[in-house]
Length: 276
Image (cartoon, rainbow, N blue to C red; front, top):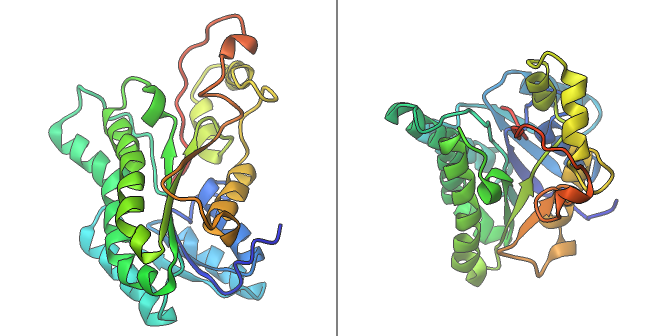
């Protein structure tokens, strides 16, 4: 795929997930397309990713920080400006389905919002000056839970619903500056975090088969590579007149009648698309 990301500075929050996570996959996709990934994550494995990228001849930067800290969000963008002097793309990718439901405390709910939503706002806010100068774009990663509900995860659902609303709000605010803003909605994606979650079941492979059967297209989960490929399209000039949209990459999981795929009901599943 040639999406002409040559020398574009692409900030990817949550980019230091485990090998095979959506964030990590996207980091490598951006680098292979000639872009310069900036990984912003709390996990120190980002240092090994930075070293590996540099060894392979790719320019990159890892910023280890806690994105639940408002000051750290500002300082992360300042670090990008200090090193590169510009920013072309912001990918807000942090997200953990943390199970903060109605029985959780107020403090846990607010913490969930900071983890899954507030840093999206802060990174966008602090990136505005640079994005205005580059006429860049923002891509917000959201979840099926924003559209379908799930139960038992009020903080995550509120956050990802707000991500979709903010995408359209920002698209309106920023269109006059030539800045595009879109969102990507993910359902069941076969990530390391999803695999870890399934491992808590007595029969992980059996549970996976049940979930796979619910996906109309191919009866399988979406791969992180398929998600990353769609991200590349949305942040590139190939989608130069697309803004305010929520793009769903899920094999028809949300919008198609799943009775076409399976006749027996299965227990509701938890969608975890990224871990930082």
